[in-house]
Amino acid sequence: MSGIVLSINSSEQRGTNKYPIEEGYFKEGFGLEGDGHGGDWHRQVSVFDVSSLDRISDDERRICESTYSENITIKGMIIHTLPIGTRLKIGEAIFEVTQIGKPFERDPSTHTPREVIMHVEGVFVIVIKSGYVRVGDMVSLVDES
Image (cartoon, rainbow, N blue to C red; front, top):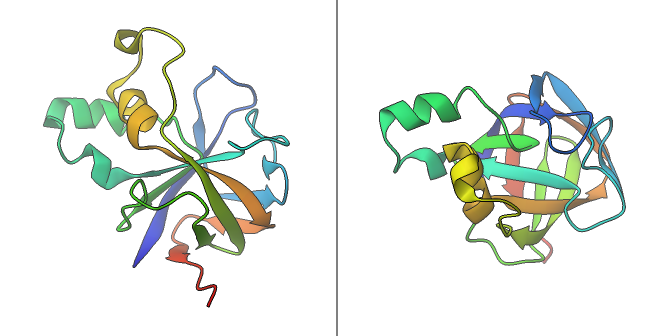
């Protein structure tokens, strides 16, 4: 099972829109350098597989594809069904899945369709090994056998 990085997205502070960047440095124990969600906690980085958008309308999808609510957007690897503790290699970095989805902090009707899906199928990870992640990098499971 493997995928590819479609975008890397960052925001300077929580509660603001994320914007695409060409590459990001993901620091062990912190997350994406320069991102407002980084820190010593269990949701350092958010990862989202765009196949989760396949079941919404074309109009909703166009809206979703113009906004970002996650740090790493991937294609080709359904990750929201992976067990907690699974390790992923994305680019040079290694991540560990710590949470799938998250509770809504405000009325879901105030979120974009992408944010609603992210709340259900978004994957949160911590950085286990630092490294750069770039658009086009491969995503794979870490074989720990």
